[in-house]
Image (tube, rainbow, N blue to C red; front, side, top):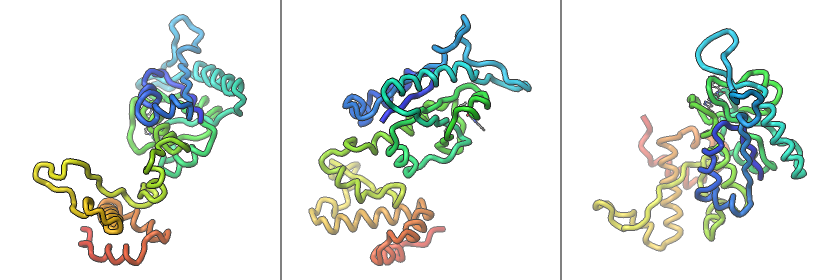
Length: 255
Ligand code: 9WO
């Protein structure tokens, strides 16, 4: 998998390329990152990447030309590596909402160009001519698209084959409740007593069937309280057993 990122702040991306699970996968060559800084594709002495908005108003707008030249450099590099042009995805609160199934779709592709805006935004003519998709992480405004781009890369890279698949997480993955199903159950580790609070005793019982039932019920209870919409969806999809439904009946009604 290949990510080309068009950004005025390429140094931020070491957070995903150098650290943790995504860093290890990057060093293993499972995915690659190339950053393209529009400032390196300017033609004036001041290396200008922004200008005042037509029609007036506050702030500055990213110029089309440095973005276009940066994109052409990324495409030339893709072509030199024998790849077809990758789709251009803009990080924008106006985009389609990103979720786990969108991450799975991206993980099945050869890669993407992630375009990160700054200032008040990007000249709309560049967006109209070059952007294939817009992705939003939610209804909030940031100072740039870089943090959403890193979040998208993290969500996608950890789904790639042979990333995250340590001894038991590969096995766990097939039935681990994720956001496409139910919320995950709580986790506990040592010590057995923390500030006088013990670990639920069933988890140290060694009784695997009881442990599985305890975790399932913890998932169902948490999801019913915090995300009743996910319970409705799970029911719709036939993911709830009669045992699950009987347990849900025992919970206090939500107010
Ligand atoms: C910001 C914006 C606000 C209201 C309506 C439309 C908008 N478009 C943009 C936009 O593209 N902004 C650029 C990227 C430049 C300013 C910082 N940017 C940004 C991206 N802020 N917030 C995001 C973002 C991206 C994905 N998910 C959530 C927020």
